[in-house]
Image 1: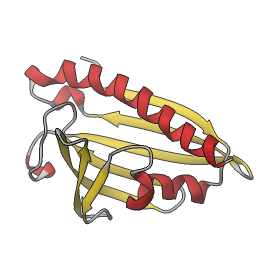
Image 2: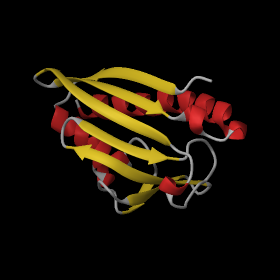
Image 3: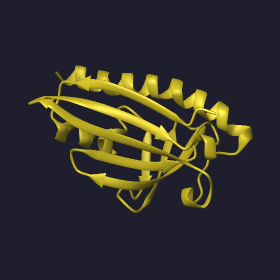
Length: 147
């Protein structure tokens, strides 16, 4: 069972602006979930809503401004809204590396699929693989629209 999703893109923006687009709730909703409720900070749980049908609790694992942001969630269309740390979950990590002033590489890694229950592991990997392609495209478009 594949255990990891990895994606990488280059964005013409500062590390601070990219980090804020990922880590600030008022900005992440411009490209990823439709809404964020709860406490979207390190050590706390928040709730991502995608339309009226799907919600997903997230636990913010780490927040190192302008370089790294990570959270845990139960992937796939499972509509999990409980304590993320009480069930098998995956870790989503965003790493931001400045290539030159105003231009950064954003690396996304999601790990932990092999630790999910067998009945959802493969479908979650496939769904999130496609989902990250779509969502990272939206992140790229968010910055292209601002340029």
